[in-house]
Length: 65
Picture 1 (spheres, rainbow, N blue to C red):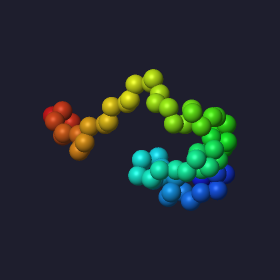
Picture 2 (cartoon, rainbow, N blue to C red; picture 1 turned 180 degrees about the vertical axis):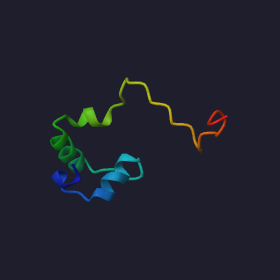
Picture 3 (cartoon, rainbow, N blue to C red; picture 1 turned 90 degrees about the horizontal axis):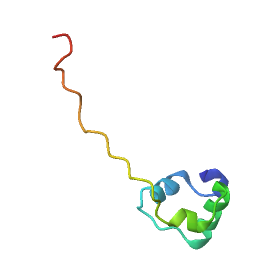
């Protein structure tokens, strides 16, 4: 997608993580690549936010006991 929008992959990643703010022109290029509208990109979705996975390793309890 970054290649088709003519932007660097790392810059696209920083946009996805919310670390950078895109220009309006860039929003139009990304929307064009995704075949959607700019409002589709910038409005919040009604979909529920997925929960993060638990951190750390699984405990060894129950394995081979």
